Image 1 (spheres, rainbow, N blue to C red):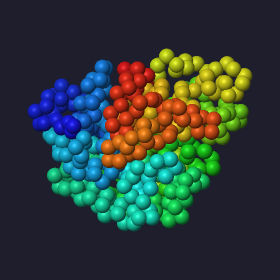
Image 2: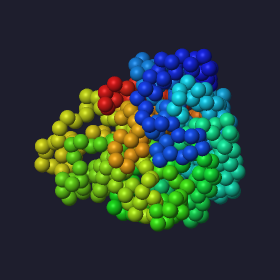
Image 3: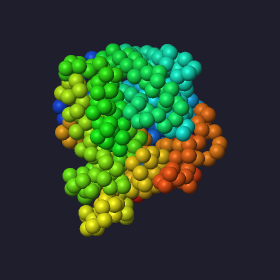
Image 4: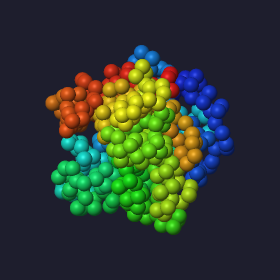
Length: 441
């Protein structure tokens, strides 16, 4: 059932929750048609009514229910809305209502996630389009164009709209083709072509801020991929010599579980740590150090010095009773790393409903050098996918990486059991995220 907050209820929430937030805002609101350097500064944030209602329905959920989260447009149907979720225009209309209760502009985050053969590295790709079935043209006309037309409505011109473009596309281009879909994607050039169209179309709208996804430290932080990824992103965005491009910034760790900061170890401790089983040759062990370093490499690749990074911290907390409190003293490198790391996954590649994860740093503007924001782009408590062999809403199929009994090679999936289909509310996971939040609630 769709949950929509009317003006009176939103007024009550604004009066008791949203307006106090405005008292800590800094700076002077910009004119609606003027792009600012960082859309997260001097703004209020859109609270998704569906997320709010879902969170407050859980014990303890009221503590975080007012946090802003991303609005995922992961199918054509979600643009107009479904029986379960409001569409893009409904969210924007609600954002205008929320905006009316404050003096500062309101920032709303939307996520485009429907590339042809999206998530091609996964066993199951639940997108609407296929490269081999006119997917590139359909992506433009049935997906990007309708989104852009809605965003360009003058009714929304005061809003700051952060458009996060296609999370997790980079592995499908950087890594050896793991599936026949990836082989087709790489041979066709569909991803770069589709992305260029999307970022150019969205950038043409004056109050839209395009953030292109840059994956996460586990993939791009590896020295084999670091420079190639930056150059590829520059090629896609047409970035040369620091000249303006359609891309305002980049996102990392979207819908991921990577630790924001690993406080008890890093790769500077010496080659044995870098070559440990967990680190596996990567130059980075957390998202903040990776994002800051990758930003510099992106600037070297041709992006302007004003680009900023946004880190999804929605599920990167890894608190709770099993969080280490000091650096290990073990002389065995693998045991040293395992006892020191806060990220408790079996592999940095594990992505589905990870057991033991917690809410991460709360959404914050300019928390560190080069970082535009920590954001909860993935709404905590929303399932990544299911292993149950029953198609979910919108025909979503199960994925083995969401099966808690699945082992890929020798690595368990680490997924929680009994998860619903992707995009559905998963109360069990939300309760774990609350319990394991770091910083604690």
